[in-house]
Image 1 (cartoon, rainbow, N blue to C red):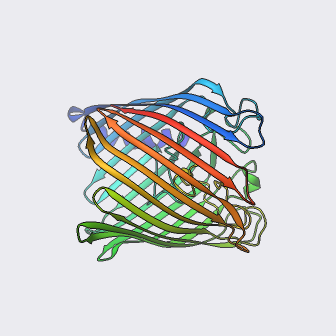
Image 2: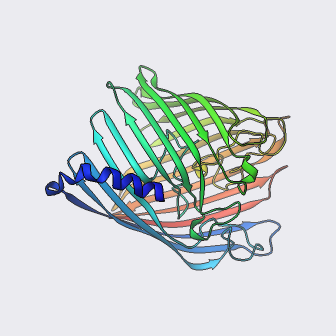
Image 3: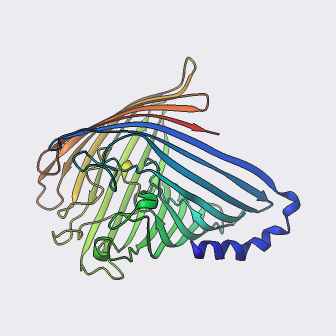
Length: 400
């Protein structure tokens, strides 16, 4: 946090000249969530009712803005293991009680350049490699400097250096689940709009520079390319994603490994009904722990099912063949943005193609005024990896 304060103080005088034009915007949001987990092999279910509140203020003056936001997470019902406290006889629900400075940033934004310094949320592309872990109550933020450069229309360079990752474990985080992880993290993404979609080349250098974090074994360098596009198809719309990356050890990682990542995803939106399918591979390295393709800074809940069985890639890697179907309505009576969705995942190892199991995910959500309600269910059926697990969520989100 010391570096963050130094950066903010150093940049603050430049914005002071516009003090007479300062516009203040209050920030506020709340999330109430009930989560239940039933996992074979444990004597008790886990049940959590948590309330997350964020509040802050943003001040803008011309091209400059400053933002400060605090957050707290309260466990109203705490019959669960949060990863740090509570009986390990219950399944983990990774939402420990917490109070924290979520963001404290200074930003300069012009048509061709935006620079953000301080504690901030960062997400690149689909957040498969670097994200904010938005589903978890505490989220993930970064003490960082980020520059977004747009030299010409349709071309963008997005670069960030982060010296600390503020994890979901909060103020009581310790050991392998620390409050913050230091290191020299470097993220780079250069993209251009083309007739077939946005083409990006990226480099994500993750430095988990603390021995408690798996003995430095989560430090890696990943280089790759990504295509993300869409176009009309009659009265429908088709969208596609293709991505490839190569990962190897970096910095103080004692492992010597290399592994590949592949993604192919296609979706068709018929203006209500929606169908999609994809295939994602996080490859194996030499078959030992943490030599497979790892993404420790990703928003993991978005990928490989909501049961969260593959947040750490198994030693033999993983292949995820998935399909989904849903339907959306702009309005149903007083309800807005009504959505139902079902997804199916078939998981196999990358090495030897052994079955890990399969998963079904279900979602229903709608908005009423400023409140969005959602109901989720995930069922992981284990074969040769992990344990049968059922998860339920009922969630209400409000934003100022």
